[in-house]
Image (cartoon, rainbow, N blue to C red; front, top):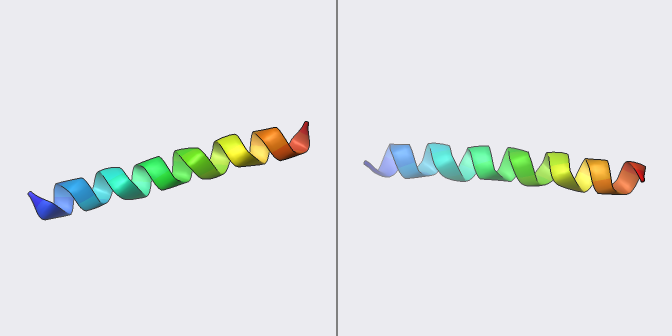
Length: 26
């Protein structure tokens, strides 16, 4: 169960990084 939550946190982090990159490119 904990590993599942960890995976979600990593996924969210990657998504946030992508959003930040897109914001910066603008």
